[in-house]
Length: 109
Image 1 (spheres, rainbow, N blue to C red):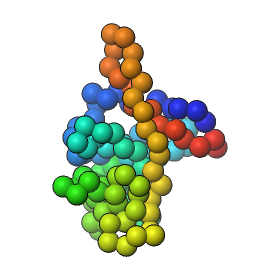
Image 2: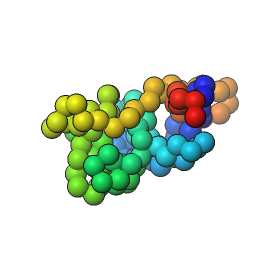
Image 3: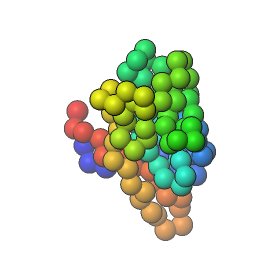
Image 4: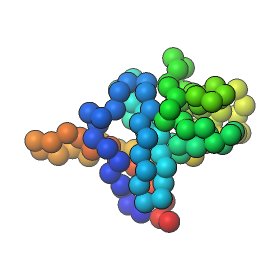
């Protein structure tokens, strides 16, 4: 699948997750320090919704169920490298007269 539009940039709030479901993907979209990040929504620990969590000061998305913190940059569990959640490349698609679109590079189904 080529770049896929997920939401408008102005729909995101700093350090708060946004849930997006598209083409069978359940994703958590985060805005942190002006950068956008996308990861799978289900925490690999117990399936908690990452989009229901928040981003901590260290740049990790924190699962609301058990507090597991995954680095936004690469999906690695902060306290246990080698355990990770899937992350996706992101870009902003600029449109004249409209809000920027957040797009992710999702693999072909």
